[in-house]
Length: 82
Image (tube, rainbow, N blue to C red):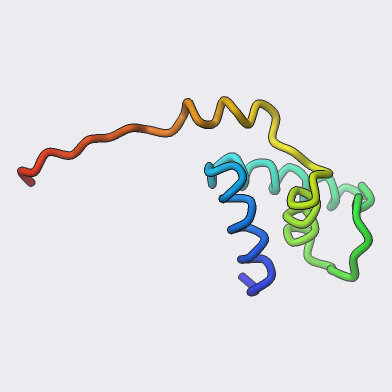
């Protein structure tokens, strides 16, 4: 993963906090780009995943029901015995 792509991903993790939802949204958008959809941003980038990440960062692509992702975060308590 390039340094720029990693920074984009970390920005989205700060926003959404759910790596699985980000991965699914980026994969769906990259798939659409692969099927001849045009990028929603001006870029010289050729990597479809990087384009999809940038589009999400800029708000052109969003995760539906992002607030519901907070419900999915497990609150696990570990006992001191292990």
